Length: 159
Image (cartoon, rainbow, N blue to C red; front, side):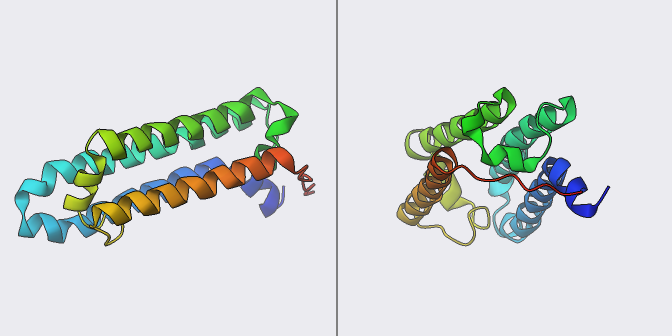
């Protein structure tokens, strides 16, 4: 089994590891801000925990599809129009997370929380920029989703 076969079959594990590393880096960056203002500690804990748990949901969904064997590789997730239920579940999980993030950001105090906790959203602390950047990220994701639904992307065959 070649490296490309392994990576395309177990990409979801790599993504979980990268999400874990990013959560650790956010936690590590937060230590200097917590030293300056210990009251931020609980907020950083909530943000890092939420980041790790919520952003791993799509990767766990992908992993279930790959382990059960209904999705042979990562590349099948680029073809949602084939109607594979595991691929559609992955798209649904990402879409639901976008909706929840947008509600949290605009209506549940997410922008304020992110602006008070530097290092979570890069070094951006301006609430307007946080909203704008978030909307741009989601718009980019929607563009990618639409592209995958419209274009018949060929699936590579690695031996």
